[in-house]
Picture 1 (cartoon, helix red, strand yellow):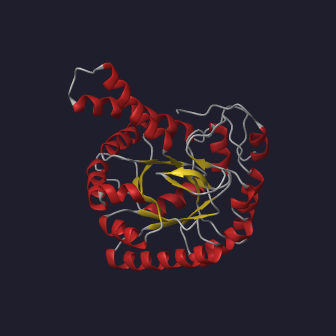
Picture 2 (spheres, one colour):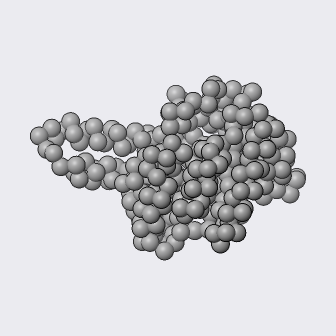
Picture 3 (cartoon, helix red, strand yellow):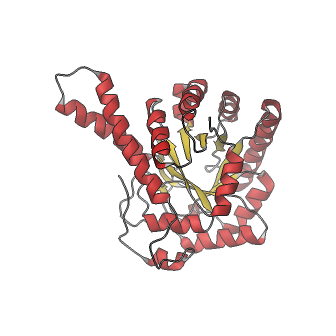
Amino acid sequence: MSVADAKTLFRTTLKRRAGIGAFNITSLAQIDAFVAAAVGADSPLIVQVTGPVVEFLGPEAVAAVFGVHAERCVQPVVLHLDHTSSPELIAAAARAGFGSVMFDGSRLGLEENIDRTKRVVSMVRRLERSLGREIAVEAELGAIGGVEEGASTGTTPGATAALCDPAEAVRFVEETGVDLLAPAIGTAHGFYRTADPHIDFRRVERIGKRLEEAGIATPLVVHGGTGLPRKTLHALIDVGFVKVNISTVLKKTLIDTAYDYISKHRGEYDPTRIDEAVRAATMRCVAEHISMLRTERPSGEAAGDVDRIARRRGEDAGCE
């Protein structure tokens, strides 16, 4: 069984300047497809579930199904609780077996976000001692636009006022003690309206520089990974983004595949056939995104050249 220590996996991946796909489920059946794709690609993977979905499915049920499928995966896999502002749900997920959790205080002012996040981190550290294992804590700084599981951030994607202040990033990590930071850099939840979404790479560089100058080696997280071009993903990985969240395209894959199958087989009433079609399509989509995150560069392309990559337009946007 290769359920990974999330903190160790993220730190090791940061040192390698690599990226790990974090794929959101809305159904327990998707866990099987995600892990199967990881096995086929010989790649680590994060299975994650948002607060509203885990409340619906139950943290114990999610952790149990994850554990069964993780047994067949040689590469490290992690179960992550994504986007919740409920300390009670975070505690329940940790006790159920989640290896990583996210407290989302992005709708709060800076001071309150720091205060509440710090309290959640302290709570998780106490749980670590009682449970005898480590649990990574992720938090968001700034406001990432779009919609996540029906909850709008109330901001326009990419609006400067909502983006992460590089100086505040250092203070936030130092005062809260989080293990992962998701800074708002211009990405958004949902589908982008362009094949080359605008990412504030100048801000990205300043965040990385400020953290480095402060001696902080905290892995960063990309939210809104669906539709980002391959070279944009590689540029972000180069400067310390380790965890790349993929959600919207998986919902589309599930719904569109089920709709297409039902439309073509109206006289058939065998739900397992629908599940099989969705599983195959989901595996292909996850495998494609794992491939996109591979950090090998085409011949002649240097790693770390963020400016040049940021100026390019019209790159491949992956499976949508």
